[in-house]
Length: 456
Ligand SMILES: Nc1ncnc2c1ncn2[C@@H]1O[C@H](COP(=O)(O)OP(=O)(O)O)[C@@H](O)[C@H]1O
Ligand SMILES: [Mg+2]
Figure (cartoon, rainbow, N blue to C red):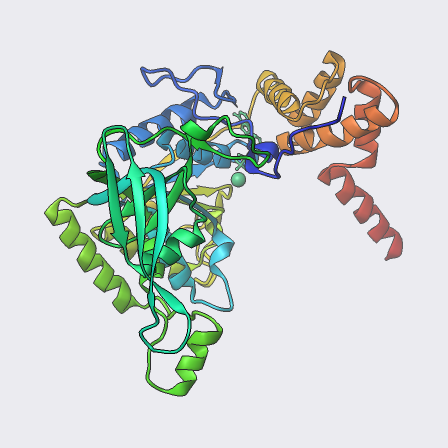
């Protein structure tokens, strides 16, 4: 037996991250939360409130509003926000950032915020395109004498035969399309897709009819396209305003040599200016008026929102009032704290009162011991660890006494210890050893302050 195994890429599905087990809000169809569902345990009130937010977003009644998830660390605020994004699906943009991300030496804080705002506003564009689609039956370049004289010949046209379920067609294409076809490595027997207006060409895959041919290379086989070769097709594209901004930030043009050199070395984008954004907004609203496009307000999630400063908050206020605005979800684990950049001004959650007044606040509360145990059990399963019942109890105990995060962090090293000790599952000893190796904050602080008093 030759050892052949499929190589699994380092893709997202194969990694377990802190919130991998969260698959959604776990709500019933009537909007009430199951005690444990979708990877979520407890926190019933917050989940139901998030469910209402999801409904409001889906019915497009929420644009320009803001929600605050407030609660102690490790009570599932970030998990709630991610579950909201999962409930919304991939068609609604969801842009997560952390408050501190706006501080960069390269761009202004408000610029960074604006960029993320625009990442969270989607546009669904419907276009009817004229396309040619079919299996390639013939591919012959037509040669002509080189028009510049000299030797050699040039390709003047490309003859291509296409076959679909209902018919066949022979097309004569420009040499420019020939290049595109060469780039896609199209050969006879492939199914391709040609856009009539732009000449864009895409190789869809190998035609089904050739599925039996001997081919070691991984190929994707596709059926012969239905209908005629030449047809009108409605194409729906989901883009965000930020996509439009970057796509329209054209390479800097100019007649001088320097700029030409610049273009040769690398396609330099111009900055995305306010003017450019205004232009794009104009075009977008025209599209919306014409019914070509539809606005899809998404979610901008700002975690650890108390990290923003007063400038950012005033900016947020204004941005929420603009005609096209996403829904903003904030999260904070601070009670009362100083607003950054506002000279010791203390406010709830470190957010200025005028913004606070706009917020719908969803509280998250600490978990009961049973809930902590259930969450740890779910995590152990997701990480593929087996753990004995008494060991689970012991980890859960830490979850209650220290913090849920500390308990969750103990799992992986405890598993390593169990493996070293050649055990098939984590038991109490491994957990005990782990808690000596990796101490919690309370103990570490005590040790260090004891040493301090020794020094002084
Ligand atoms: N109700 C819950 N059900 C399942 N897992 C949870 C729940 N609450 C929190 N977690 C998990 O606990 C960890 C800490 O929660 P997190 O959402 O980061 O807390 P916060 O953002 O409130 O500080 C994460 O791995 C999270 O997925
Ligand atoms: Mg968090």
